[in-house]
Image 1 (cartoon, rainbow, N blue to C red):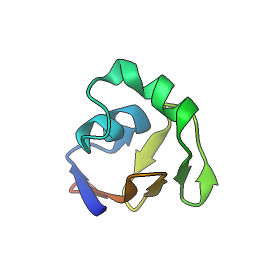
Image 2 (image 1 turned 45 degrees about the horizontal axis):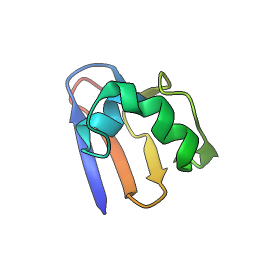
Image 3 (image 1 turned 30 degrees about the horizontal axis):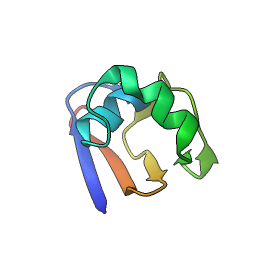
Image 4 (image 1 turned 90 degrees about the vertical axis):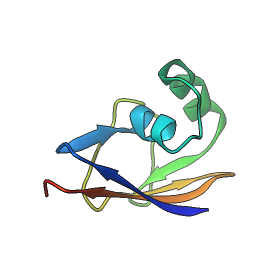
Length: 74
């Protein structure tokens, strides 16, 4: 799956992105998900659910594919 998430704000957190993309059902699942699956932000491994993602961020998620962040405010 390759998808784009469009945000209306300056950034979105990794936990919010996972929920917005339908990968997790609630924000509370983010910490568990990030400990169980490999997630890369712009090619670097990331496990912080509060990681701020800005326009152009590329997220690769094990078992789910890739997501690009697009901001209307950029």
